[in-house]
Length: 167
Image (cartoon, rainbow, N blue to C red):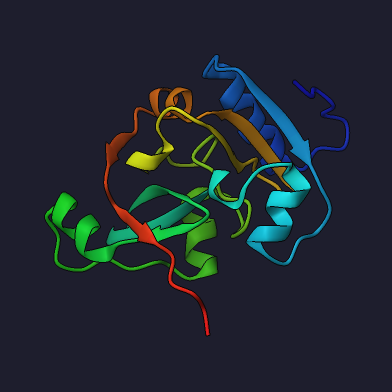
């Protein structure tokens, strides 16, 4: 593990302290700015599918949850609505996501979020190494997906579908 906190951003420090308290094995990866999933994967030395995005979903006013989504997949809204038994959900804007989690978009992680919202992990996260945001731009934690799920007490379900190509 990388333990150089001297120049760490506050979000990174908070996220690292939380993952350390979880007592799971992890490694820290740092990289410069990236403009795409593919660039992020190359910088982290993983496949795009191994990057797990932490998406913030709003169920109702001041009621959010985190959804862990592999990089090559996207949320299936019908599956997620059915799982949660709700008719409407949305993704908050950047300001609302920051207020709900304490992290800027692109740095969001359930580890050390200012509110411990419920976590749902897509079933494809189980049993493999993943790279998840580390609370600051260019910082990621690599850990076993099953360990992350256990540490976060995440529900595991089929809530994603293969990403559609962007036009």
